[in-house]
Image 1 (cartoon, rainbow, N blue to C red):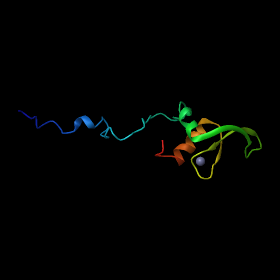
Image 2 (cartoon, protein in one colour; image 1 turned 180 degrees about the vertical axis):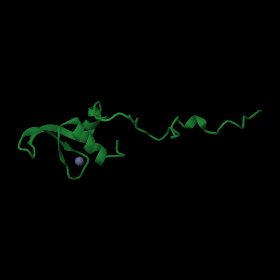
Image 3 (cartoon, protein in one colour; image 1 turned 90 degrees about the vertical axis):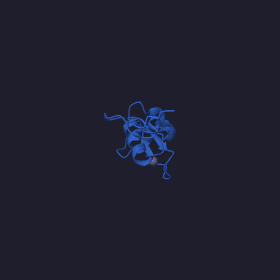
Length: 93
Ligand SMILES: [Zn+2]
């Protein structure tokens, strides 16, 4: 039996970035903003839409945050929700 000693052991378990594949890693895109297309994920973090008057006095659609204990109310814009999610739920995706 011949073993090729030049071959790194466990090479099959490491992806191109050197990150073990069994660790769940979100694909990271370089282009910003990355909010578009995340709406489906965001719906898992935020409750149903409802009309709520914002700080500027305008009634807009808002969504309640389900993750923070404060149950923050956020404008229903994907960028707003996305930024909040990234700032507050990092690692919970
Ligand atoms: Zn929140």
